[in-house]
Image (tube, rainbow, N blue to C red; front, side, top):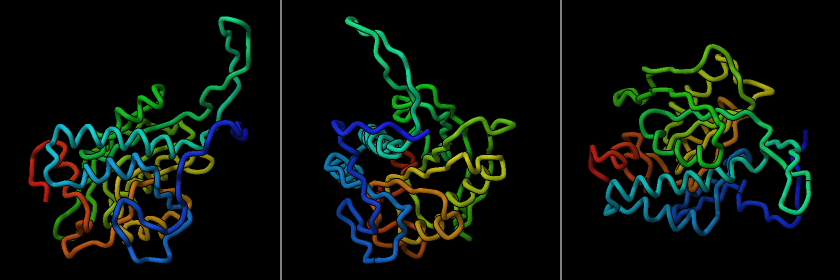
Length: 245
């Protein structure tokens, strides 16, 4: 079913072009059309707060939540709806309700900070946890926790992870979901706060059918696989377990 369109309601401000946002320039001209970089002023403002090394964990968590809500709004712009009869105080009318069954897959642990905002947008969404950590020697993902149900029961999966760095964890998570059954006609989308060009390319090369939504594409990775200019370790900064840098 095609989604309804109301010309009186503006479309969300989403850029599918390779232009980076959030004050960081990639200098890359070949990023894919499946990449959606937000240009919303509120997103750019909050991202600057998130990047600041002086932002304390409590404020950092709050801004992660706010950014997740805004990016989730944009990622759901093409979600399907179905008619719903609604009685107002004056008369009965045909409204709409979300038609897609949605699954949220936060990548532990940093992705946990994005879940509550997404549930505010989609209270009926299912939440499944997937644990992946990056081996600091090989920079490859290692799966250590998987709470997916026995069979796929959704139409749209949103993978939540603040950082898309090398793309290893994202690619592995997508592979897990596809093996589990989240393939066409089920859609998979990746929602990140910031991304590196290397990670975007890795995901797109491995899974060209997966769309990526983020607040900014930064310049590059450094020799340890950290995003530059980045915002530090999103997990440590949310939970106060490490330095911001």
